Image (cartoon, rainbow, N blue to C red):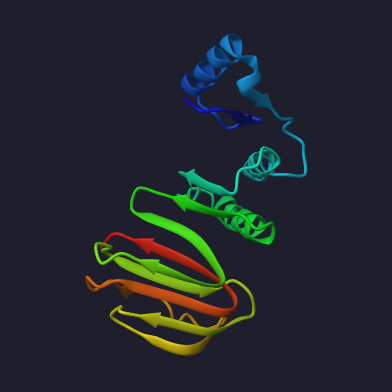
Length: 175
C-alpha cells in the first residue's frame, strides 16, 4: 500500500475514487486532497512533498503514457525539478523508462536489452560519450535541434553514457 496518496483526483475514475475514499476514511493522514485550481501539477506537488520528507530517488509509474502529451512533458520537467534539487527520478512505463543524466556517467548491465534514445534537454549537451552500444559516440555535442541519439541498441555488453556538461533526456526500452 502507498505511504501517501496525493492529488486533486479530478480525473480519477469511480472505482479508484472509491478506493482512495476508503483509505482516507481508514487512515486520513495517508491521503492529501489538493485543490483543483492550483499552480503545481499533482506530480510536482507529490515530488515537493517527497523532497520535504527527505526522499532523494523517485520512481514514478504510468506518468509518460502519452494519453495527454502536455502531462508527459510536464512530468519530464518534474524530473528536471528533481535534478535541480540534487534528487533523481524515473518515469517508468510497461516498456520504457525515462530519466535524466546531468554532468555524470550512467552504467548499464550486460543484461540490459532493447533500445536507448537520448536527447539534449537544453540547447546542447557537451562531451557525450556512449560506450558498448550499437552506435558509439566519443565526446560529441548533442543539440536539441538534431535527433542524433534516437534508437541506439544494447549489444549484451556493459554499456555507459557520459555527459560532461549539460542534461540528457534518456529513454530506455524493450525491443
